[in-house]
Structures are given as structure tokens and as C-alpha cells.
Image (cartoon, rainbow, N blue to C red; front, side, top):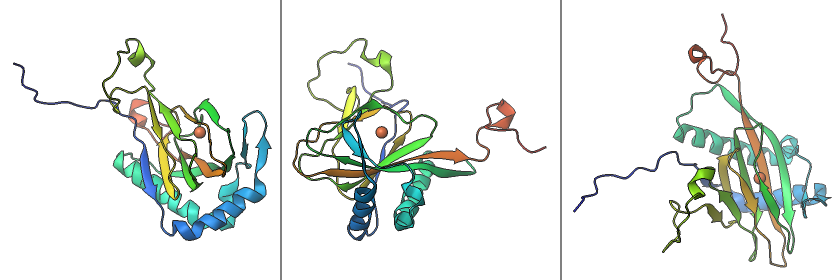
Length: 208
Ligand SMILES: [Fe+2]
């Protein structure tokens, strides 16, 4: 009889979740900003705002907390870096039967979403296994776990922030409730020098 002595989760894709301080007090301000600048995105079947909300002073507290969460995530990942910046930030509004198809966020390092309104019937965000070869043989499962699933769905929770790698493909499932699901998404990119110059993998030449 073989005795199990270890089991490793190799190459995991880390999704971190946070609750923000004063989330309740912030909700109305965030909702106002999204509602006043939302535009219909006909080709996507939902509504979005322009991608510059991070420059709106009413979101300063929110953006500060987003940056703190990103720094915490980077610490967990043990990244060594000079800095990072929010590159885009936009609001999303999903009404009945709205959804968003599978996509990722190119030209960024970390992405995230904050749930301003997540009433009953709000669509989940579903993340896809980034290893296409992992589904070549796909047996039935007695129970779905993070170790055997090709798709993992995370239901939205009001006041909660998710961070995920920008390359990790995801989609937003159908909202089936009558009330709008409102979220704020953002991207961030490393700034300055990152990577190891001695291994010719740096983002730019190190100073002479
Ligand atoms: Fe996305």
C-alpha cells in the first residue's frame, strides 16, 4: 500500500480577495460616479464608463485602497519591483440578461474588480484554466474542486475586491435579477525597472 507523503499545487493562478474599509460609506459615492458616466456598449451587451475613473477625485479613497490591496498581493507573491500604476479604471453596469464574454486584460500585470452592487441574481465571474493541455483528457468528477475544474466561478459579493493576473481569462455570467449589478474594474502595470538585468530579462537597461 502506497503511503501518501506529499502533494503540491504547482503553478497555481492566484486570485486574492479583500474587503475594503468603510465600504458601506463608499458605495453611494462609487455608484454615483458610475451611474453618471455609464454609456451603453452595444457590442458587449452591458454598460461601461470610460476608463479614466482613477482620475476622479471622488474615487481617491477607493483607489488608495486598491493600491494597498495590490501591494499586499505583490508582497504575497514576493515580487521585487520599483512601483506600479493604475492604468485604467472603469465602471460596469449589468442589467437583466447582460453578460460579458471570455477575455483577458492585455498590456497589464494585475487586474481586479470591486463589487459596488451585487443584488440577488448577479452574474458570477468565471475564471478559465490557463493550461489548455490540462483538458485533453477530461474525466467525469465525483466532486468539482479547484484542482480538477477547468472553470471556477466566483459569485460577486458587495464590498469585496478581487485581484487576478491580467493574463487569466475570465467572463461574466448572465445577470438574471431585476436589479442592476454594478462593479468597478481596473488594471495596473509595473513601473520602472523590473526583471533581472544580468539575465537580459529586465524591462529596461539598468543605469550605467
Ligand atoms: Fe475583465
